[in-house]
Image 1 (cartoon, rainbow, N blue to C red):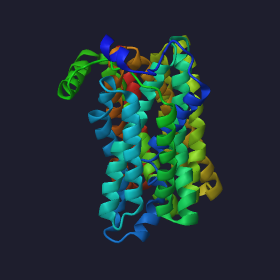
Image 2 (image 1 turned 90 degrees about the vertical axis):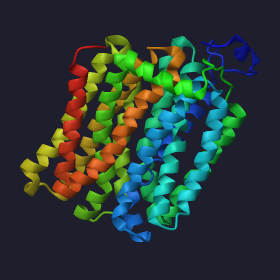
Image 3 (image 1 turned 45 degrees about the horizontal axis):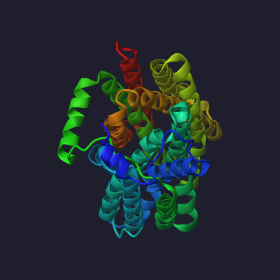
Length: 409
């Protein structure tokens, strides 16, 4: 629980009784978007990197996995600190370290250094998972859903538009420019947060070790949390498998560059419309129903990407195949993001005083799924080509649907 002495000692502490300014909301949305985008810049430029960096080219495909693994580790080990430290300090410090990680990666002389930089980016990019709970605290109860939805829209746009940015910049200015420009943008977020982000009162005084141990109790005692982590993790596996292999498949099958591969993020960005819609549907019909609907949409979209080319492959033109990919990206992104918002609604309502730890546990599952999807997607592509990747993504989405159709909240 919040310590009165702690709360009283913080000047300019976030006040949930007052309507936050539009500037502050936009800062949080931009901060979440730019931060989480950092772990996706590498995906559409894998072909460029394999030709540009000396060393074992086949290891380039591990870069997305290292970024996702770093993100999972950062969420598990660092995000819980938001319950016992001033979130303002955490956000500024981690965003500053992300700037350094991006610059380090942009100067990588070999594949080994690129992989190390990707891991560092993943760990520090978890500042996005400090920003989302901060938005829930700043917002008045009557507007909490709207504000969290706005910040999540920024985060989801960061995930999807990062590929567009990365692909275009790499093609025009080289891959190193991607990370340098991203570092400059993140430095702007650091300065803005320093000037405008309020302080946050702690909700616990548990030492760090006990804070981490308390997460084991939360995991055991809250079945709704486990179901959310398992289901969203399965959906994230399929999501990551698709986006991690897409650029490689487009390059090998259609001989297209990184700009077109990144442009598919524009199709996926349509899925961000799910954020406000999912919130309204969850309020009206219940979050559990939205999770089932979202998982079903995701499974159906991946299944179409698997079945239609198998049935009509020889008759489909290049143009038709690219259109199908874009439609599928819109569909499964919409379903996955709707399910994510609904799961956050469930999890954030369990124990408000442990919101950072609950968020950390759920998103640890999400990004273990992401890292697994990058690795398993690469394996499936090597064994069975693009159809193998789509079969994997379809099966993962069906597993998530089965979890949500089971008994429980």
